Image 1: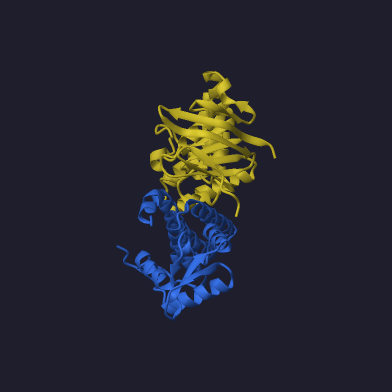
Image 2 (image 1 turned 30 degrees about the horizontal axis):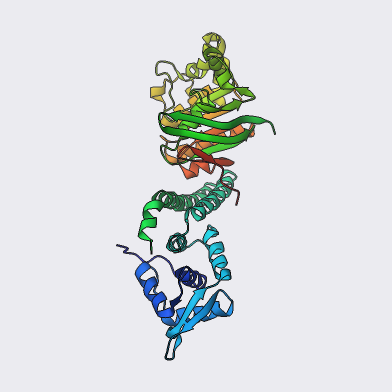
Length: 186
Length: 223
C-alpha cells in the first residue's frame, strides 16, 4: 500500500509518536513498538532502545507516568500512561504548523496521521500550515517582483513551485480527511 | 483606509445549494484580495454577487457605499459600468473589433462616440504595454496580449474596483506572471482588485486571501 519511506523520525517526533499512541490507553514499550510498526510501515522503524529511552525521559519530564509493572525484569515490563501535561504537550505540537522551508515532507504527513490516530481533527493543523505556506509564498513573490535579474527570478520561482506543490498536497489531504479518518480509527 | 466592499451575511442559494453562505468581510481601497478555494466552493458566485451580476438571496453587499440590490436593473448596469471593471479567464473580447475599439466598449455603452475614444483607448493600451497592437483584432493577438486588452478595457471608465475571474487560468506561467504584476500595479495606483483563483502562485501576488469552502468564506489568520 505505502511503497516509499518518508523522512526521518527525529527525536521530537519519537516523543510525539509515543504520546499519541499512549493517548487514551496505557501501554507497554513492546506494544507501542508493535502499534507503530503496524500504523507506519513507511516511516523509519523505531528501535526498542529508542522507545525505552524516550519513555524514561518522558517519565522524568512528567509527560507520562508509570502505572504498573508486571513480573520479571527489564523495561518491557513497565506500563506507562500519558499525563495531563503530556496531553497538553501533544496538542500543542499537533496544532503548530511546521517552519515552511525546513518542513520535511514526512513530518507534514506524520502530524496529520498522529492527529487522526489520537482521535483529533487534523484540519486546524492543515489550515495553519496552509496559512504559513501562503505567507512564505507572498514573501518570495514580493522578492521576485523586486528582483534585479532573471537569475534571481528563477531562483524565487524554484522556491515558489515547490511551496505550491506542498500546498496542493495540503489542499488535497484536507479534501480527503473524512475518508482518511476512517482508516485511522483504532 | 476607506472601504471598497462590505459584505454582511451575504448569501446566495440555488435550490438547496448554499453557493455563498452568510459571508462577512470588508475589503479596503487599494487591497489586492485573492478568493481561493476548490472548484464548486462558490468563488465565482461571490464575485458575481460583488459585481451585481447575481442578486443575493440573503444579506447584502455594498460597493463603494452603494448597496447594489437596492438599485433597479438599469441603475445597477450603469453603476457597474462606472465603478467596476471585470476581467475574465477567456478575455471575452469582441472578435470583429480591433484592440483599441475593444478597449473603448465600456465608454461606448456609456454613450461615448468611437471617434472620440481612440486617444484614451490607445493611452490605456500603452498602460498595459500594448501600444503597438492597437489595430490588431483579437485573433491576431496571443492569449497574454488579449488579456492585456481586457485589462485596458476594464480600466476604460476609470473604475475603482477590478473583479478578475481566473485571469491567468488560460495563460502559460510566464505570461501569467506578467498579468499578475499588472494587476498588482493597479492596486499600487489606488485601485482595489478582487481575483478569483485556484492557483496558489497567483494568490501569492495578492496581499490578502479569502478562503471559500462549501460557500463559507474565511480569512486565514496571519502567521
